[in-house]
Length: 323
Image (cartoon, rainbow, N blue to C red; front, side):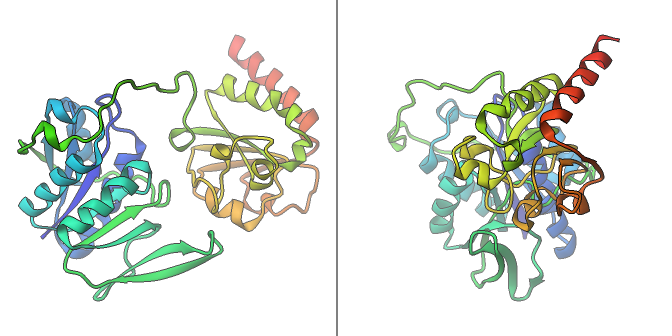
């Protein structure tokens, strides 16, 4: 038995997401006294593949094929299922993102495996195999039992964290039998967002709430984010009122994040919001209400108007940068 982890790469590089998946699988492997096998599809250099062993992968299966340069759900699912059978993997772990949501169900059908999506913790029980996930738009948790011999999990991003556990991993190549006819979709062009820090990968996040009063007041938040190389975020009321795009909504009902620094302006700190940002290493809150719940979760707090605090903070950071 082993635990197989599908690790995504972006132009040959792994991001925090992949290391979190391996860390998560490694924690299960310790409890089950087994090993973690990571599968990488694409042209990834050996040194980058080795990075997966820093987080608990005992074996890394590298799949390089010119037909697999771009994500294609059916062929990717076929390859992952073949590797799962070859490695005798009883548990397969994916990220709960667009790729994982597209591939995991296909692998589930191929392996006749039970699937639970959006899991937030390691199993609470292995006999029967029981995992926890959010329910009712994040207002409750459900314990789900998987009864099949093989089990598939998609892990909610930033719900577990990254834990180093260096292993002396072996790297093995795998050459799948693929035919061009299996690729039903042809990728004509790939356009990527550049020059913007992605929220899930950001080490620093600057977030605004309804206390910012209107969408026209977001300029200082964007300026501060640019100064710090940070991503911008918002609370649910802000995205619901279309002040900011829904892709920036963080919280239990939005994106779950775990940056090193989370700066909030005008966010009161509803329990759903705190549930999605509580893994941040340091939380700094600015709010006019000294009794706002956000201050109970914050490491540092400023009782004041965000419209006045933000410009002063920006000037102070500019002064430090010019020294």
